[in-house]
Amino acid sequence: MIRTYLLNRNELENIKYDSAVFSARRNEGIERMEPEKGKQLAAAAELALIYALKTERPDTVLPLDITENEKAKPEIKGLEGLFFNLSHSGDWAVCSISDEPVGVDIEYIKGGALPNPEKILHPYELETFAFITNQLEKQKYFFECWVAKESYLKNLGIGLTVRPTEFYVEEDKMLTEGGHKLKKRYVHIFKSEEIRGTDWKFGTNYRMAVCSMKKDPDSRARIITAKDVNGVLAS
Image (cartoon, rainbow, N blue to C red):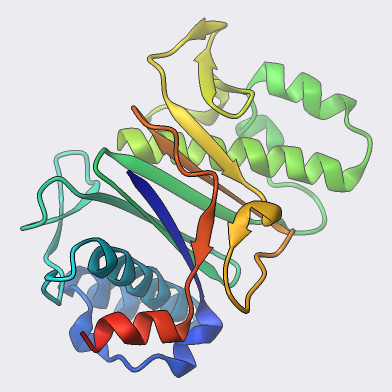
């Protein structure tokens, strides 16, 4: 089971919440963040997590007791057998939960020059990148590689101890290193047509990826709204 939920920060103005619903870890993070947009995205990320958990386990008690394991990857005390990962970029926060370790990353595709492709892309990927002449397609390819790698590293809980240039993305569901298969990992890269929701549309200028060691993530992510979140907060 892997479920992925997106929440737009602009929904916060219609959500009935205060800091008491957040974990101590999240409140400390929000307090440190600047500017206001960063605070909103951090709040939206944990609200998406609360919705995901309450949907799977309605008896989940708030605030969540979030700690870190030995790899500094967040985990929830008292909810054994459930794993989660969060990310945010632009106006969107995303949460993935699973019964196996999971990683998720979302990135806003900014216009203009790309941030150091040679520090992100494997030499094989740089060859493909060089052959793409359309700037928009170039950006899409770069960010699809980026989110796949970030979600992979977050799934393993090893951060940047492995450099993104040391492995490359082969298709959507397998990562390889030096031409050799790694232990199988499943990665799904989400695009706008694969997001389902209600009143919202997931922008084409975003890319998102979810990675799991043992399970292929759902090919659809769900956009949640203020109404969804208010419903679980009131329960």
